[in-house]
Length: 135
Image (cartoon, rainbow, N blue to C red; front, side, top):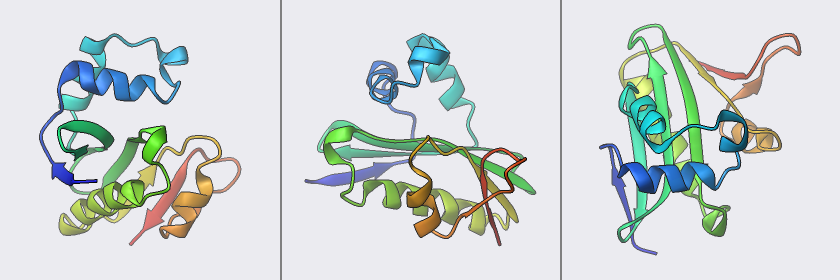
């Protein structure tokens, strides 16, 4: 694989197809336009390409000072377990660290908690949603 990283929004349809690969849109039912609006309103985003094909994505919603929320970390199924998710997550956390944001939260897809635990995140109390990484 020839991987490249971009911090610019991906093509609208390419992102829609990547988002669709997760099955999340079965519940959200978002159009390509609304998904694109969501990602372009992000504080920071990371795209990973294999040549010119979008194969991974992650983004942060943040106030830029105190709180950051990592969402939509997606890697196409064919290349999962190849380090691409870790690469994206490292980029996202590094951005938060460079801005000295002390509270990094994330949404984890069911069954993916182990991945985030290995990256230094911890499970939040059972009565709280998501996970967190505290600097």
